[in-house]
Image (cartoon, rainbow, N blue to C red; front, top):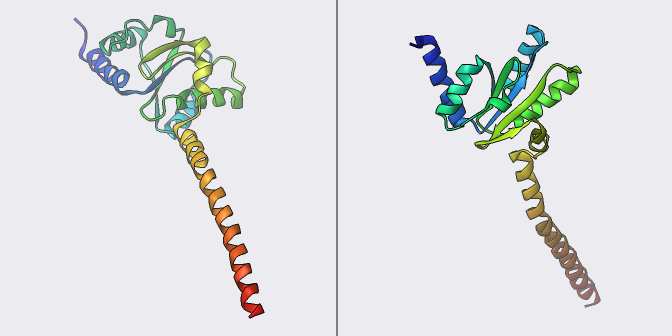
Length: 172
C-alpha cells in the first residue's frame, strides 16, 4: 500500500506533466547544492519550476498524464524543469547556465515539448527555436516594413507636390 506522501507527490507531478508545455529532464550528478539552488533560482526568475523527485514516482506520474515511457529521459540524479508558458525556455536557460558556469556534470537528458518526447540528441534543435516573443517581433517587423516604405514614398511625393505648388505660387 503506497503511503499518503507518495500518493500526493504522484498527484502533484501528474498535474505538472499534464499542464506543462515544456519539461526538460536533467542529470545533475556531481553538482553542489549551491549550484543546484542557483540553477533553480535562474529558472524560477523565468517562471519555470525545477523539481527533484524519485524516478519511480516520476514514471508513475508521467504514465498517469499519458506518457507511456520516460525511461530513456531519466538518467542518474534527475531534475525536471517545468514551463507552463514558453516550452523551449527551460532548455535555453539550462544550456546558458551550463556554458556560463562551465559545468560538465549537468546535462539535459531529454524533454517533453508540447506533449512529444525528445531524446538528448534532439533537444539541441528545440533549444535553438525562437521564443514566442522573438517570433512576434519578427512578424511585426515584417508587417511594418511595407507600411514604412509606403509612408516614405508618400512623404516624398507630397513634398514634391508642395514644392511644385510653392514654386507656382511664387511665379504668380
